[in-house]
Structure formats: C-alpha cells, structure tokens
Image (cartoon, rainbow, N blue to C red; front, side, top):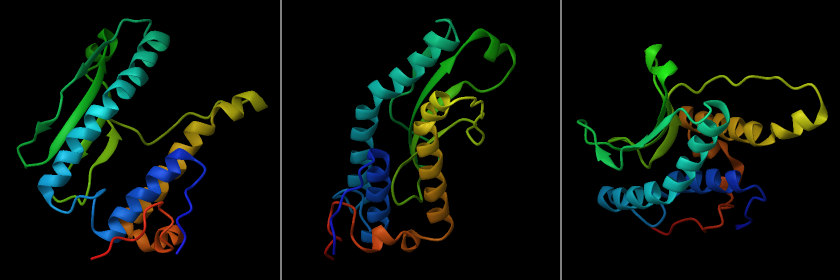
Length: 175
C-alpha cells in the first residue's frame, strides 16, 4: 500500500475525503457527535478564508458595496448542521435573487460534511491568450475535483484507484 500524497493541495483534500468513505470515518471520528465536533472546527478554520474570498469579490467586483454575513454553525430543523457565509448587495437584493454564498453543511444522513455555493454549476470561458488560460488553472482544478466528487457520489469511492491503493496519506483505517 502506498501513502503517496498528491502534489496538488485540492487533490490531497479530495483523496482524504474518499479515504474517509473507504474507511467509514471522518478524520479520526466514527460517531455523529465526534463528526459534528470536527464540523465546528472546520467551520472555524474556514472562516477567515471564506471571508477573504467574499471580501475580494466585494472589493473588486461590487466596488465595496456588499455586506458580508456569516451565520456561525447552526442546527437546521432536519438535524443537520450548517455554516453559511453570504455576500449581499443592493442590486442583488432588488433582483430578488440569492446572495453569493459559501455554504458548509453536514446533512443528517451524510457520512461527512460538504461545501457548496448557492448556484454554482456554470463558469464563464473568456480566454484569449496564454496568460488568461493559465489564470484559469485554479478554476479548472476546482471544477475537475468537484466533478470527480460528484461521480463518486453517484457510484462510490471504489472508482478512484488511489483511494483503493491507500494513497490518501493516511493508511486504511483498521477496524
């Protein structure tokens, strides 16, 4: 079994995710209560980065006119946990559409938490030179990783050879 770590950080996170599915854990947590504790920690750790991403969008594209809100970790009526970071602005509110949202959630029936946006499914492709193409690499990485995650969601973790080889950087969990 290999414990090779991917050279690309977002692929490392994806492989840890698949290893959790393989091993029936989330990090070192097995129980729902322990996984919820991990969710609280993850939301706290993500907070400055979610605020940075939304703040950058606000500064550059909304000309500083937006309002960033964060819910903190909350319990939904169905027993799931969530933490939402939202960016509101006058034109968005007047159009009666949702704000830009980064949403961490741990659904009641989920094995472990996930991230999503309010509407993400399409990304514009306006590339006219090599520098513009290179600038899309983080977006392309995020789309490819999200697509692989969704394919695992449709089937299971066994479709990813590195997960089955134990290449998550963490050996397969001993039961």
